[in-house]
Picture (cartoon, rainbow, N blue to C red):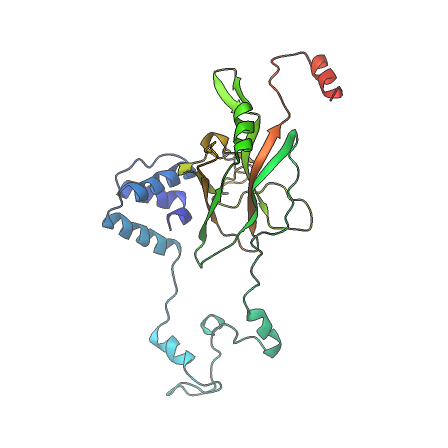
Length: 290
Protein backbone atom coordinates (compact mmCIF):
# COMPACT_ATOMS: atom_id res chain seq x y z
CA UNK A 1 0.00 0.00 0.00
CA UNK A 2 2.69 2.47 1.03
CA UNK A 3 4.59 2.09 -2.25
CA UNK A 4 1.54 3.38 -4.17
CA UNK A 5 1.38 6.64 -2.18
CA UNK A 6 2.16 10.00 -3.74
CA UNK A 7 4.36 12.64 -2.16
CA UNK A 8 1.45 14.34 -0.39
CA UNK A 9 0.22 11.06 1.12
CA UNK A 10 3.70 10.08 2.26
CA UNK A 11 4.08 13.46 3.96
CA UNK A 12 0.73 13.04 5.71
CA UNK A 13 1.72 9.57 6.94
CA UNK A 14 5.15 10.64 8.19
CA UNK A 15 3.69 13.73 9.86
CA UNK A 16 1.04 11.59 11.56
CA UNK A 17 3.79 9.30 12.91
CA UNK A 18 5.89 12.25 14.09
CA UNK A 19 8.66 11.67 11.55
CA UNK A 20 10.51 14.13 9.34
CA UNK A 21 8.39 14.66 6.21
CA UNK A 22 10.85 16.65 4.11
CA UNK A 23 12.66 15.25 1.09
CA UNK A 24 12.02 13.84 -2.36
CA UNK A 25 9.61 11.03 -3.10
CA UNK A 26 12.15 8.20 -2.95
CA UNK A 27 13.48 9.57 0.36
CA UNK A 28 9.97 9.84 1.82
CA UNK A 29 9.18 6.32 0.62
CA UNK A 30 12.32 4.95 2.27
CA UNK A 31 11.36 6.67 5.54
CA UNK A 32 7.85 5.21 5.37
CA UNK A 33 9.15 1.69 4.72
CA UNK A 34 11.61 2.05 7.59
CA UNK A 35 8.71 3.14 9.80
CA UNK A 36 6.79 -0.03 8.91
CA UNK A 37 9.74 -2.33 9.56
CA UNK A 38 10.96 -0.72 12.80
CA UNK A 39 7.75 -0.24 14.76
CA UNK A 40 4.30 0.25 13.29
CA UNK A 41 1.59 1.11 15.83
CA UNK A 42 -2.05 0.16 15.14
CA UNK A 43 -2.91 3.83 14.71
CA UNK A 44 -0.30 4.12 11.94
CA UNK A 45 -1.68 1.02 10.24
CA UNK A 46 -5.17 2.50 10.32
CA UNK A 47 -3.81 5.74 8.84
CA UNK A 48 -2.16 3.81 6.00
CA UNK A 49 -5.45 2.06 5.19
CA UNK A 50 -7.29 5.38 5.32
CA UNK A 51 -4.85 7.03 2.91
CA UNK A 52 -4.97 3.99 0.62
CA UNK A 53 -8.79 4.10 0.48
CA UNK A 54 -8.62 7.79 -0.42
CA UNK A 55 -6.05 7.01 -3.11
CA UNK A 56 -8.05 4.13 -4.62
CA UNK A 57 -11.73 4.54 -3.68
CA UNK A 58 -14.04 1.66 -4.48
CA UNK A 59 -17.51 2.24 -5.90
CA UNK A 60 -20.22 0.61 -3.78
CA UNK A 61 -23.59 -0.44 -5.21
CA UNK A 62 -26.78 0.70 -3.50
CA UNK A 63 -29.84 -1.53 -2.90
CA UNK A 64 -31.54 -0.26 -6.08
CA UNK A 65 -28.47 -1.09 -8.15
CA UNK A 66 -28.26 -4.61 -6.72
CA UNK A 67 -31.93 -5.23 -7.47
CA UNK A 68 -31.36 -4.34 -11.12
CA UNK A 69 -28.61 -6.93 -11.40
CA UNK A 70 -30.89 -9.70 -10.09
CA UNK A 71 -33.71 -9.09 -12.65
CA UNK A 72 -34.08 -11.37 -15.70
CA UNK A 73 -33.25 -9.83 -19.09
CA UNK A 74 -36.07 -7.73 -20.59
CA UNK A 75 -38.06 -7.25 -17.34
CA UNK A 76 -38.60 -3.99 -15.57
CA UNK A 77 -38.57 -3.35 -11.81
CA UNK A 78 -41.87 -3.59 -9.95
CA UNK A 79 -43.67 -0.24 -9.85
CA UNK A 80 -41.71 1.27 -12.70
CA UNK A 81 -44.05 1.95 -15.63
CA UNK A 82 -42.90 2.16 -19.20
CA UNK A 83 -40.07 0.40 -21.00
CA UNK A 84 -37.03 -0.81 -19.16
CA UNK A 85 -34.29 1.79 -18.96
CA UNK A 86 -30.88 0.51 -20.06
CA UNK A 87 -28.64 -0.61 -17.25
CA UNK A 88 -25.43 1.43 -17.07
CA UNK A 89 -22.45 -0.49 -18.46
CA UNK A 90 -20.62 -0.05 -15.13
CA UNK A 91 -23.27 -2.22 -13.41
CA UNK A 92 -23.17 -5.07 -15.92
CA UNK A 93 -21.24 -8.19 -15.06
CA UNK A 94 -18.01 -8.82 -16.99
CA UNK A 95 -18.78 -10.40 -20.35
CA UNK A 96 -22.45 -9.23 -20.52
CA UNK A 97 -21.74 -6.95 -23.48
CA UNK A 98 -19.74 -9.62 -25.27
CA UNK A 99 -21.30 -11.92 -27.84
CA UNK A 100 -20.52 -15.63 -28.23
CA UNK A 101 -17.59 -14.85 -30.53
CA UNK A 102 -15.87 -12.79 -27.81
CA UNK A 103 -16.01 -15.42 -25.06
CA UNK A 104 -12.49 -16.59 -25.82
CA UNK A 105 -11.14 -13.13 -24.93
CA UNK A 106 -12.27 -13.55 -21.32
CA UNK A 107 -9.81 -16.38 -20.71
CA UNK A 108 -6.75 -15.37 -18.65
CA UNK A 109 -3.56 -14.73 -20.63
CA UNK A 110 -1.06 -17.52 -20.91
CA UNK A 111 1.66 -17.37 -18.24
CA UNK A 112 5.10 -16.16 -19.22
CA UNK A 113 7.92 -18.76 -19.24
CA UNK A 114 10.00 -18.80 -16.08
CA UNK A 115 13.27 -18.68 -18.03
CA UNK A 116 12.52 -16.96 -21.35
CA UNK A 117 14.98 -17.02 -24.22
CA UNK A 118 15.85 -13.35 -23.71
CA UNK A 119 19.12 -11.92 -24.99
CA UNK A 120 20.47 -8.66 -23.60
CA UNK A 121 22.62 -6.24 -25.53
CA UNK A 122 26.33 -6.62 -24.77
CA UNK A 123 27.86 -4.09 -22.40
CA UNK A 124 30.48 -1.82 -23.98
CA UNK A 125 33.97 -2.33 -22.54
CA UNK A 126 32.86 -5.43 -20.61
CA UNK A 127 33.52 -9.11 -21.22
CA UNK A 128 31.10 -11.80 -20.01
CA UNK A 129 32.76 -13.98 -17.38
CA UNK A 130 29.87 -16.10 -16.15
CA UNK A 131 26.15 -16.33 -15.50
CA UNK A 132 24.82 -16.83 -11.96
CA UNK A 133 21.09 -16.29 -12.55
CA UNK A 134 19.78 -17.00 -16.04
CA UNK A 135 17.12 -14.63 -17.42
CA UNK A 136 14.09 -15.05 -15.14
CA UNK A 137 10.64 -13.56 -15.67
CA UNK A 138 9.44 -11.10 -13.02
CA UNK A 139 5.89 -12.40 -13.24
CA UNK A 140 2.91 -11.13 -11.28
CA UNK A 141 2.02 -13.70 -8.64
CA UNK A 142 -1.01 -11.99 -7.10
CA UNK A 143 -3.64 -9.35 -7.74
CA UNK A 144 -1.55 -6.76 -5.89
CA UNK A 145 0.12 -4.00 -7.83
CA UNK A 146 3.45 -4.42 -6.06
CA UNK A 147 5.39 -7.64 -6.51
CA UNK A 148 8.38 -9.37 -4.91
CA UNK A 149 10.78 -12.01 -6.23
CA UNK A 150 13.58 -13.91 -4.47
CA UNK A 151 16.77 -15.21 -6.07
CA UNK A 152 19.69 -17.25 -4.74
CA UNK A 153 23.05 -17.93 -6.33
CA UNK A 154 26.41 -19.32 -5.22
CA UNK A 155 29.93 -18.71 -6.46
CA UNK A 156 32.40 -21.44 -7.32
CA UNK A 157 35.87 -21.39 -5.71
CA UNK A 158 37.36 -20.41 -9.07
CA UNK A 159 34.95 -17.48 -9.47
CA UNK A 160 35.67 -16.28 -5.94
CA UNK A 161 39.40 -16.38 -6.64
CA UNK A 162 39.01 -14.51 -9.94
CA UNK A 163 36.95 -11.73 -8.35
CA UNK A 164 39.25 -11.34 -5.34
CA UNK A 165 42.39 -11.16 -7.49
CA UNK A 166 40.77 -8.45 -9.66
CA UNK A 167 40.53 -6.08 -6.69
CA UNK A 168 42.03 -2.66 -7.36
CA UNK A 169 42.64 0.34 -5.12
CA UNK A 170 41.50 3.51 -6.86
CA UNK A 171 42.58 7.08 -6.08
CA UNK A 172 41.01 8.20 -2.83
CA UNK A 173 41.55 4.84 -1.11
CA UNK A 174 38.47 3.38 -2.82
CA UNK A 175 38.37 -0.28 -3.77
CA UNK A 176 36.88 -1.67 -6.95
CA UNK A 177 36.87 -4.97 -8.78
CA UNK A 178 37.74 -5.47 -12.43
CA UNK A 179 35.47 -8.54 -12.45
CA UNK A 180 32.08 -7.44 -11.13
CA UNK A 181 28.93 -9.23 -10.07
CA UNK A 182 26.16 -7.34 -11.85
CA UNK A 183 22.38 -7.49 -11.83
CA UNK A 184 20.55 -6.51 -15.02
CA UNK A 185 16.89 -5.95 -15.91
CA UNK A 186 15.18 -5.78 -19.29
CA UNK A 187 11.80 -6.33 -20.93
CA UNK A 188 10.71 -9.91 -21.54
CA UNK A 189 11.02 -9.76 -25.33
CA UNK A 190 12.64 -12.48 -27.42
CA UNK A 191 12.39 -10.82 -30.83
CA UNK A 192 15.70 -8.96 -30.54
CA UNK A 193 18.48 -8.18 -28.00
CA UNK A 194 17.08 -6.03 -25.22
CA UNK A 195 18.45 -2.89 -23.59
CA UNK A 196 18.56 -2.45 -19.83
CA UNK A 197 15.14 -1.48 -18.48
CA UNK A 198 14.15 -0.91 -14.85
CA UNK A 199 10.59 -1.87 -13.87
CA UNK A 200 8.72 0.92 -12.02
CA UNK A 201 9.40 1.49 -8.31
CA UNK A 202 12.36 -0.88 -8.28
CA UNK A 203 14.00 -1.81 -4.98
CA UNK A 204 16.80 -4.37 -4.65
CA UNK A 205 18.20 -6.00 -1.53
CA UNK A 206 21.36 -8.10 -1.63
CA UNK A 207 21.95 -10.31 1.41
CA UNK A 208 19.50 -8.22 3.42
CA UNK A 209 21.09 -4.85 2.55
CA UNK A 210 19.44 -2.22 0.36
CA UNK A 211 21.36 -1.90 -2.89
CA UNK A 212 22.02 1.66 -4.12
CA UNK A 213 20.47 2.35 -7.51
CA UNK A 214 21.24 5.09 -10.06
CA UNK A 215 19.86 8.49 -9.06
CA UNK A 216 16.64 9.87 -10.48
CA UNK A 217 16.71 11.90 -13.67
CA UNK A 218 15.03 15.32 -13.58
CA UNK A 219 11.44 15.02 -14.84
CA UNK A 220 10.79 16.20 -18.38
CA UNK A 221 7.31 17.53 -17.48
CA UNK A 222 5.84 19.23 -14.47
CA UNK A 223 4.22 16.67 -12.21
CA UNK A 224 5.75 13.68 -14.03
CA UNK A 225 7.12 10.81 -11.98
CA UNK A 226 10.95 10.87 -11.86
CA UNK A 227 12.69 7.89 -13.44
CA UNK A 228 16.05 6.25 -12.93
CA UNK A 229 18.44 5.66 -15.83
CA UNK A 230 18.35 1.94 -16.61
CA UNK A 231 21.78 0.35 -16.48
CA UNK A 232 23.54 -2.66 -14.90
CA UNK A 233 23.72 -2.66 -11.09
CA UNK A 234 27.09 -3.51 -9.58
CA UNK A 235 26.32 -5.66 -6.51
CA UNK A 236 29.92 -6.79 -5.89
CA UNK A 237 30.33 -4.72 -2.67
CA UNK A 238 27.25 -6.43 -1.17
CA UNK A 239 27.96 -9.94 -2.45
CA UNK A 240 29.41 -12.69 -0.26
CA UNK A 241 32.65 -13.58 -2.00
CA UNK A 242 32.63 -17.11 -0.64
CA UNK A 243 32.09 -20.53 -2.17
CA UNK A 244 30.37 -21.89 0.96
CA UNK A 245 27.75 -19.19 1.68
CA UNK A 246 25.06 -18.47 -0.95
CA UNK A 247 23.91 -14.98 -1.94
CA UNK A 248 20.28 -13.88 -1.79
CA UNK A 249 18.61 -11.14 -3.83
CA UNK A 250 15.14 -9.70 -3.16
CA UNK A 251 13.57 -7.60 -5.92
CA UNK A 252 10.51 -5.40 -5.36
CA UNK A 253 8.77 -3.65 -8.23
CA UNK A 254 5.43 -2.38 -9.49
CA UNK A 255 3.56 -4.42 -12.05
CA UNK A 256 3.15 -2.58 -15.35
CA UNK A 257 0.16 -3.22 -17.60
CA UNK A 258 1.20 -4.82 -20.87
CA UNK A 259 4.85 -5.17 -19.89
CA UNK A 260 6.77 -7.99 -18.23
CA UNK A 261 10.38 -7.58 -17.07
CA UNK A 262 13.25 -10.03 -16.80
CA UNK A 263 16.17 -10.19 -14.36
CA UNK A 264 19.56 -11.86 -14.69
CA UNK A 265 22.85 -11.83 -12.77
CA UNK A 266 26.37 -12.68 -13.81
CA UNK A 267 30.01 -11.68 -13.82
CA UNK A 268 31.45 -9.14 -16.24
CA UNK A 269 35.10 -8.17 -16.59
CA UNK A 270 35.81 -4.50 -17.18
CA UNK A 271 38.20 -3.87 -20.06
CA UNK A 272 38.98 -0.35 -18.84
CA UNK A 273 41.88 0.52 -16.57
CA UNK A 274 42.68 3.60 -14.52
CA UNK A 275 45.62 5.19 -16.32
CA UNK A 276 45.58 8.64 -14.78
CA UNK A 277 45.43 11.91 -16.72
CA UNK A 278 46.87 11.86 -20.24
CA UNK A 279 46.67 14.17 -23.26
CA UNK A 280 44.05 13.55 -25.93
CA UNK A 281 46.66 12.33 -28.43
CA UNK A 282 47.79 9.60 -26.00
CA UNK A 283 44.20 8.43 -25.49
CA UNK A 284 43.63 8.23 -29.25
CA UNK A 285 46.76 6.14 -29.76
CA UNK A 286 45.79 3.85 -26.87
CA UNK A 287 42.36 3.16 -28.38
CA UNK A 288 43.74 2.64 -31.88
CA UNK A 289 46.13 -0.01 -30.56
CA UNK A 290 43.28 -2.11 -29.12
